[in-house]
Length: 89
Image 1 (cartoon, rainbow, N blue to C red):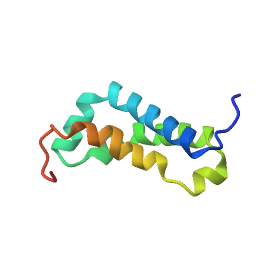
Image 2: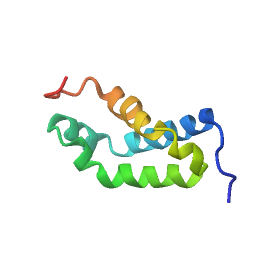
Image 3: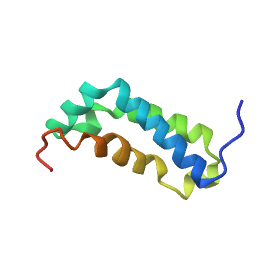
């Protein structure tokens, strides 16, 4: 089992990598969720699976004081889908 991530830079990189994979494998689902304004409901299982993976790899103290995973969801998944029509942007 790999050592737990202890640095913010590594935690951010892991969060972004997980979210990139979610985005890559769920492009249609993400677009539909954005269009219909139910992104977090539609992607709940995938986002929670990603969160659990992230949490399992990051030191508990770092996980508790950061929101790198949530920021990566916004920046990597939602931020890259600005071209999708939405009621909120």
